[in-house]
Length: 74
Image 1 (cartoon, rainbow, N blue to C red):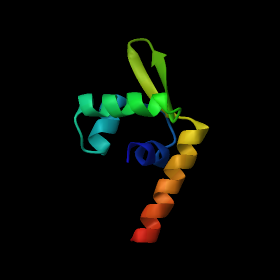
Image 2 (image 1 turned 90 degrees about the vertical axis):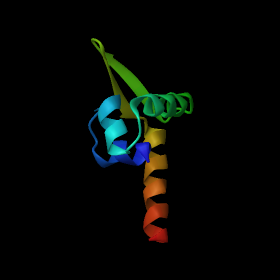
Image 3 (image 1 turned 135 degrees about the vertical axis):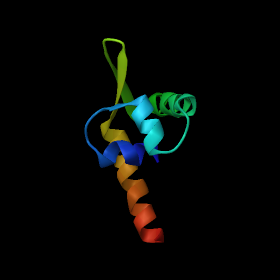
Image 4 (image 1 turned 90 degrees about the horizontal axis):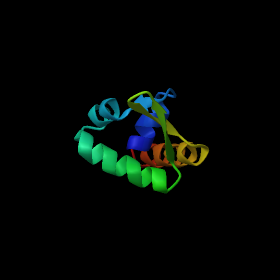
């Protein structure tokens, strides 16, 4: 759901805001985002002390597929 949340609003995101949007703790969100980064689905951009999260092209495609599956099921 993090990928879908990132795709829904195309701008880059902070981890804390993303955690609130998907209703999980910040530490859990960070662990998931690190896994998504290893898979090449998100990238982190450091701006001063802040890490911004951005979908990669591959991540955007996966998020689109997840949204399509959810629409089909509902």
